[in-house]
Length: 365
Image 1 (cartoon, rainbow, N blue to C red):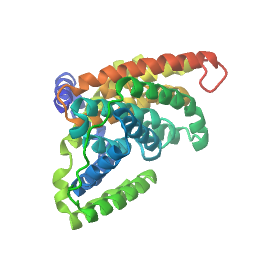
Image 2 (cartoon, one colour; image 1 turned 90 degrees about the vertical axis):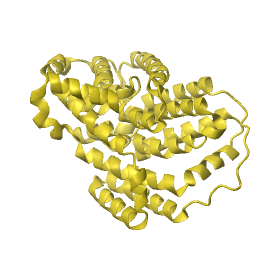
Image 3 (spheres, rainbow, N blue to C red; image 1 turned 180 degrees about the vertical axis):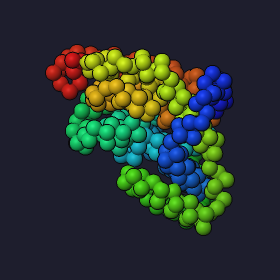
Image 4 (spheres, rainbow, N blue to C red; image 1 turned 60 degrees about the horizontal axis):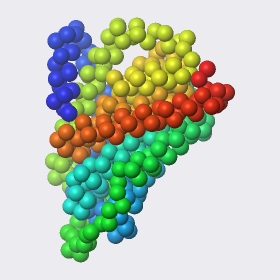
């Protein structure tokens, strides 16, 4: 995946070399700082060995693969509007990966794909669930509860569709396993330190004080367990930096800006579809910033970029994070069998809902 975006960057460099001086400005350094802080905390959890214990606990409470999937996907869905979609993935996906020895690679891969759909859907509910919602919430000064009420119909719709996906994708295969009573004890001190740092990370980030989260996490881990830094996914940080530059160049092109000049006079449904479509090209966070320059229909934009987080793997940073954590050859291709079909299903159902409620906040007018 890094290779794909690196090649894209090279092509853009050759075609538009005059944007090179702006490359550093295109990178969202705050987001990279937040991501690095989170990666350090997650590396601490992994090094503690407690993800394996959590996985065993879930296995003991699950009769079959489908019931286990409902627990994992449901956890991702519920956590994402509270602690953001990316953080929810970093909690659920490592636990899922620990189950590979029992479930097999194919089953684990399908569960991870469903967890990605779950965080994209669940995080849509609240202003703090994902970066695009935070941007919309702050730009238009939307009341917190009003935002939730506006997004509730689409989140319920996506959640119901997700239940059918779990049922259709994961079989009721009886889990044949033996819990290993001789699991390593793990580093309990590191686990609790990581847990405290995770809570502080969430609090500081929600208060827009991510610099303090960064400083505290780096200082504490450096003091107590410096080996954790060797386990940080540095390639993911590089990937995000490259992605920011790619999208920054593409979003700056005049042809892109001119193609959206019709939006100020567009109605709800058209703005919704444009927001969804642009998300497939530039990812939903840059798409939100771009479309917001031409339209003030925040409800339509919120619906479009949140539903549009599914679809192509570049439509949401959460998709990229999960596929990077999965580290499977060809996984990004197989992921589209789930994400594109799920996008189509939710788009059709939501369009029917819009047509049926023309005077509601989700109206087409």
